[in-house]
Image (cartoon, rainbow, N blue to C red; front, side):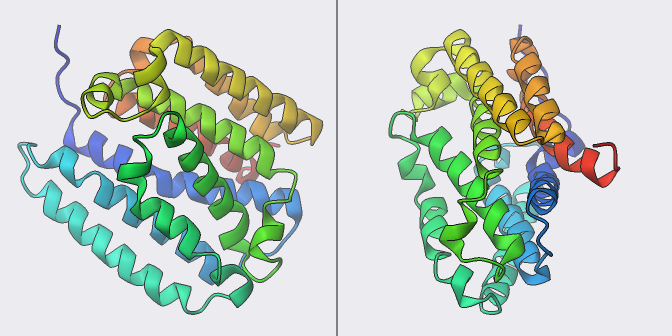
Amino acid sequence: MLRPPPSIPLRLLHYWWPVVMGWSLSVVVQRATGRAFNPTGLALLLCGIAAVYSLDRIEDVRAAPARWMAPLLLAVGALASALCLGLAWQLPWRTAFLLPAPALLVAGYPFVKRWPGTKTIVVAAVWTWSAVALPFAGAVGAWEALQVPVALPIFLLVAAGCVLCDLKDIERDRAARVGSLPALMGSQASITVAVVLAAAGVVAASAQHRPGLAIGGVCLALAGGRPALLGSAAIGPLVVDAILTLPGALIAARLV
């Protein structure tokens, strides 16, 4: 039975929710390190997320009934990209000199993701580095930022989320020869991998006394038990992104 396509508001929420997730992970790192936010670096992170996720979704909406969606995503992506260029020039050199590395990974993502297993690793690595380095640019060097202990549970949880988000694209990834774990291993084995990654993230977060991240990891593991939900276009990845937003939201609400 074919499912109806997601509504336009739900699609846009799915496309742009990662911006909120980026803010949440920044809050988690701020709590863990005690560092003050660099407004320029934080703005660069959020604009970069908006640019990447807007431009990456244009192909998905070309056949959508609402023909204005593709021009909208292109406009938002172009504006956010222009802001990124302006903000990058204002970053301290200790962070800015490493910006070409994640930029090249993002630009080459359509090719890199075809290599077996690299889709999950690349996405999780770029998210982790961006969250621990950019919002706190100047406080430490870009390499030193990765040495903060909280980077490990963030990487594990984002990697688990990436695997779960890929469940909805199994058939499309196989047809396009994209080496995502679900396309290579099937849904059940991939869910097992995601649950193991989430559990490892819970252990790492608990060892560091990060209850927000631990709660997020538990929720990701539980979400793995709902493959039908995760396989739904827009709804599945939106649920995963909302779970990954939970740790920062709990901190902001002073619940943890």
